[in-house]
Image 1 (cartoon, rainbow, N blue to C red):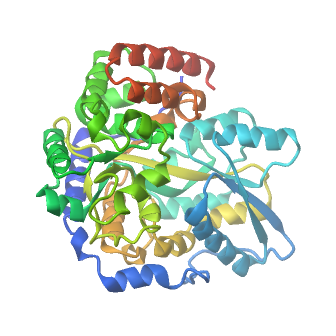
Image 2 (tube, rainbow, N blue to C red; image 1 turned 90 degrees about the vertical axis):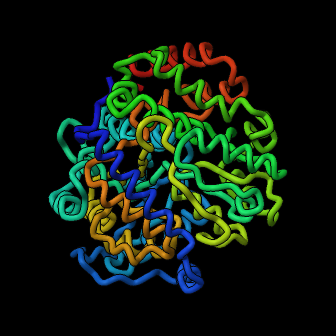
Length: 460
């Protein structure tokens, strides 16, 4: 069985965070031109922050860090690495990885060339790295920095068998829907608070001549996030935890109810840009950009995904907070869902330099640099909210930090990677098949349970 995070979570806390986020995001229109200039101003040079973490001099040291990040996200992270080099003298090389990263690392390790540090996007992947004796425990300096800057819940999901292996450098709020403000204004549509409201809003947008949603069906992971938000809100936190650990089966009636609800949008061809077939050919970046390109006649009015969608919105002419706005994922049940994700730094080759890099990544110094560049959210509670470049991002960050230990981590990221984190397999593939044929709820449940049973049984 997959290890459950030791974080204690309550439905009341989830409701409170959702309420805070809803209130915060009502201020999205407050994003100013000055903030926009600030976010675009200094991208060519590493941002400088006041030093709060002590790092050793490492002149002559050379390190590799692997992550699946691409495009602007990778470019921004390299500025963080440049600051580490400036402070320590150590040269750091970014190694582009592919999903699933565990397979990528396996081939590197088999070839005798593992990176020193890897950014692992799933607690399940951290556990696998430990089980395969790849991961090295964090040293006392990294642990001290982590304990100083992180809520206990974020520390705990980086532990395996009580020992600290991961530093969650990057977080995500995955309970957001971004929308084209011009389309909403033309349609007379309002930000929905409930699932029923969302269906009403979708119909109003459709009646105005614009397709309601872009769905990134070519990538399986956004589909799992759609399901998780509906399931958490509808079935509740306890069921969510049980399904995440496979203590209940995917053939459970609660899963049937969530898939049936999901089909209210996925099952309407006219509600999806390109219909089901078009959605299955749409990768995540395109799902975002086509929502904000095209003036008041884009390919879609809304796109679901986390705060990190801002990176892709930045590739369009839309201004966040003015043209591109956001609302919390609507409540399907009694409370709105709050699902989080993240990427953890894990040491694969233990050395003074590797420990220093992870210590730096656990500090507010590192996170502040990337926070200023936008499209990034840190679980580090000592990053100043003012570091984020616009009002939208500041409010999302404030809500995440306010949650403390009370959050639900992405369900598929808690699963064995064979089920929850592999393109073309497991939950990713099963939900792609469901998107193709949303009427077959029972068939989707059977596939999901078969694949879950195999993956949880083998622990892979």
